[in-house]
Image (tube, rainbow over the protein chains, first blue to last red):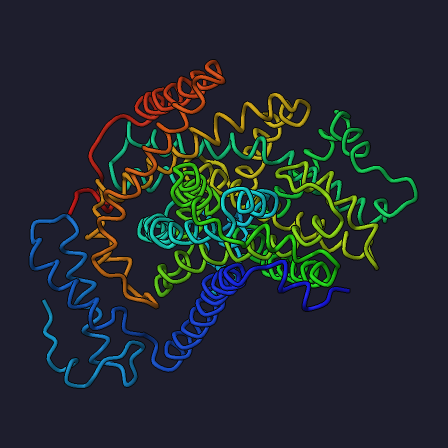
Length: 113
Length: 487
């Protein structure tokens, strides 16, 4: 079996830092994304079970969608973008609990396109 | 089996965990285990890893998001997605090229799965710990026996076909949900025991000690780029195909993008911990490819306490890594054949597996054919497929459109405007650079193969485009085709 003193001699301080940094950047991020992805999925399923539907865009994403639809009215997908926007606004007005972090005032200020 | 309802209701993943494991399993293959450890040590150790991780986050993660969201948005396989974007006819040929590259890739990857089946079976039979076992002679006896290599290739395609017959949810998902966690556990266990051996830390020093000067060498960045793009399977049609089976409430960026790329590389890191401590502890030469896995490592396990157990863990884990990739690569073609022909699931699986098996026999028998196929499709076919998919999203669909409409819909993380130039300019430029670089570096040493590879890809492109034009006729996207246009 190996002694700790041998370990330090073989792997330099920068080697240790690189190894630990790589572990954090890879295993740490992988574990976080796995946890976040699975817990978000649980939350979505829970809300769909309770309410039958969930909001589909975050406040930032919905604002960008609105801006894109208004800036590109002739785009072949503008109508679909409008439908997606209006669907999300409709859901936000109907549900008690949102998936994304929406405030009451943000929802009240939304207008359909 | 999924035949009866395939035409009316498109399958969906049964669970988020299943989708994530399928994506990770698709991208974790032989390269993570037999290539990443060695190229890390050879290209500056920790410095290489930092360059690789940087490129992974900047290029591979956004690229996988683009490919997956295209599939999720069109809800179709590769050819169907190209049709949705460009309309019927010629451009469907671009999708056909991606499918044919996958078929060619699988034809020489299936024999590798066959090798891992053979070694996993022999580890279970405790062959490596028998007195007088000589790993090099064992490998030579196996690889020079057409009966064994073709037999294992046949078994590999039989296993892949058998799983795919059950569809995406009941086939692929059901299998990878336990295969990938077991692979991770097996590598972790081998790594844990390897690290306790005397001299093991020399292996970690070889892999992690940063040689900062390596970052000033172009070859380091080229190798890191190649590994970041190829080991994540970006642009092969896998992420597109798997993304097409997501439900409308599913997230794309976090799971299909970030988790897939980082999870895949995390297994590569685990392989570094599993392989190098063992190799250095027993004073063997580090190497890459089949030499490392099938010659060097079988010498190591018998010398370890409880060696047969660790040999089983390693080789069965390695089998899981290769077979999960084989399932995904073959599914790209199966999904397309099922959608584009009158064949049901069983027929599509049978036809695809049969063609791949037939094309793979020469690679199973001859290492020269295997090497040539790998050279041509690895160096030129896969970058071509990646370029076709990324250019489609970047220049035809338009990154801003798909970002605001689909990528950020139901996403677990918000993707900002920074994503657009990466998809539109950075990835196409890098892929083009890699193709040109490979041509320049290989043309002097192997002119015939390089010229042949380029001619083959050009021919593939022309024939596929003409074939689809002839079969389908030209035309703009129809009502069912969804995303013609640009930003």
